[in-house]
Amino acid sequence: MKNENYQTYLKALEQFLESCNCRLRPVEESPIPADWEDRAAANHDRYVENLDEEIRWQTCEAARRALRRIEDGEFGTCVECGHSISAARLAALPWTDCCLECQARREAAEAMAKAA
Image: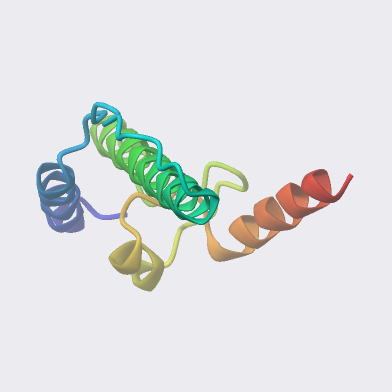
């Protein structure tokens, strides 16, 4: 990856981290509803909020790692195979650390692990 392109990705990553306020948010306790249907709905809402928070946190961590790869001169190189990550992939996901082929292998391995 050429140095002049780093500035574009650096700016995008910094803006992303600033916009999503990547800090853990305190858990807000709410009263437990007496009705079992309301309780089920509240539990589901809490589950979705926690899942959202986990995805946001993981993406922020990936963005921080991408900034370190820029500093180290390794940005744009797949951590799995060492080949270049396509410009289109980096434009869509500047925090990605692997090429499309390696990402597909990674996801297949995760799916196999979950199935086992």
